[in-house]
Length: 264
Image 1 (cartoon, rainbow, N blue to C red):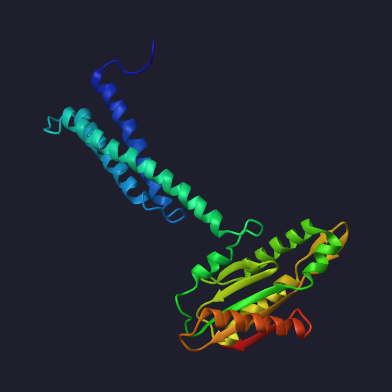
Image 2 (tube, rainbow, N blue to C red):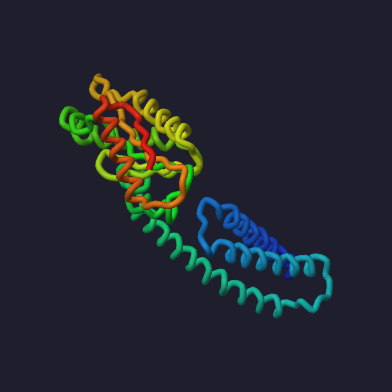
């Protein structure tokens, strides 16, 4: 024996109210996550869920207030079947888009550090270099010695912590990636030469201040940074990368744990 209402109108009201609340809540949830997971199917799916909730809401009002309406059960049922078809189709599409986005993220992310990889970084650069922007190459100093002394697991930990220190010290809009080995690449838009150097110095100090203790001993970590900057549009990114790389080598040659800037 159930406790559901035995009167048809009451039973229909409970069903329609439940449908309205469930569909509306689902539409809101899908809509609110559109920024954190910007997939194309989200907006139309939220719209279909909301329209379906509105259809149930109209029928609910008609049932509760006993209002005669041309929007009868058969019409509502037909519309629900139509929108349920699109909801199902869009859910399948959303699942596929989410899977593809996950695969793309895995392909673009360095598994060790969690930042972008070299291919992703090059894809994030503007088609051509822009005036008042900078490209930097950051190289962890004496990384081979860290690996040799403490082992590769500690070396991996150092790289992961360096990536976190850099990421937390960047401005909004800056681009970070692991470029290869112990090297990281950064793109800094909308900076003059002084600002670019200030960002690089801030990152250098953050890395120098890291505290990594292994078996009671402190692992000292520093980085050398080369910055290529220009106040002119145009050129080739290969030239910028070469200039930043040369500046990084100059920082290492100057004693390491330094920032060197160079105009392109």
